Length: 313
Image 1 (spheres, one colour):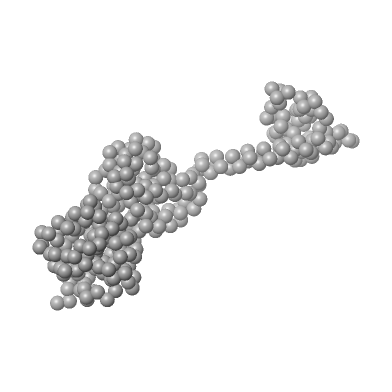
Image 2 (cartoon, helix red, strand yellow):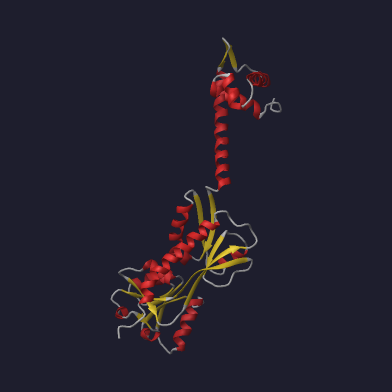
């Protein structure tokens, strides 16, 4: 029997049960009433049981037919869900984009970009994987993600990179600090200050240390930590001052954390990384545009800091 039972016979049975009439079932299936009648007779023969009683030219389902329909209905609901899912994937009304970036960018840039992305694709999904360098660059080189964000100007191996954002590092100060009266802070202004640094191996830490060493400025280097979020949290507690990327600084600016421009440039770059060895995701362009929009908004928030470039005196 299993070899003789076909999806077509089950489809005809379901149509008859749903419509309660051979002619309407035939219309539903785009076939003829005699064909439906033959298929029902064939199904009864294959199953070895009567499914319908013929009463005055109409079909009346037997208890066995009603029981069988419950199982068939569950199967057809599953097929309908598969069909709807296939249609949504065909049009990419739904879909999931895989993005990897540094933790600082996941906290300070991605929330606004995600809001813009979902405004464009409200049924889409976005998976954000925060990774530290060099694991981030390796994952992008291995083509594990549809999109990446890095704080560098050169592309990791087997990828393409386009600039997303360029700005300068900024100074963050706690509430009540003596330097808040200055609009722009020079390295010499931080002489003798308790300075909260990144870890000794961090490239930005090394760049900042080299800058202060070149100018002969001594700081109190009692605290260091591994992330811009942690640096800002320590500054907010009044434990020192720091130099961090502008995205993290602006994201946490408020009554307990103030942002000031530097008199010297410590460049901060964010690049958008695309895989070179895999097809581009259909949702990629909308996400890319959302990231550029979020970056422009953040740069706009930097303007008041950048405009305050003159000391009062």
